[in-house]
Length: 97
Image 1 (cartoon, rainbow, N blue to C red):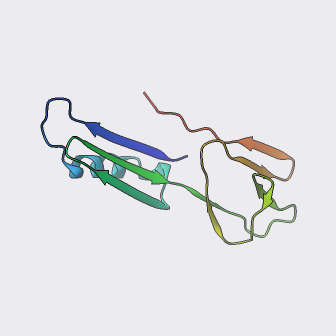
Image 2: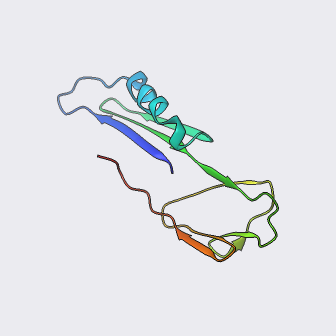
């Protein structure tokens, strides 16, 4: 899970970064590992990032067919394939309504 939030001003009113920071704080649970923000005159964007960590499993954890080093964080991106043992997951991020 990760999260993206943003505001776009269509009437020329400046956008406040604090509003997007508040939106990202509300979705902290979706990505507690990292955040980032972008601000321009008419738009503000924010994101939360979730990382995964292999805890030295016996079968290994693979991200896009590459073995993850134990105890190292890796960020998931849209379209990634994550394999843990016999379980293969294709990661897709969607906007929530």
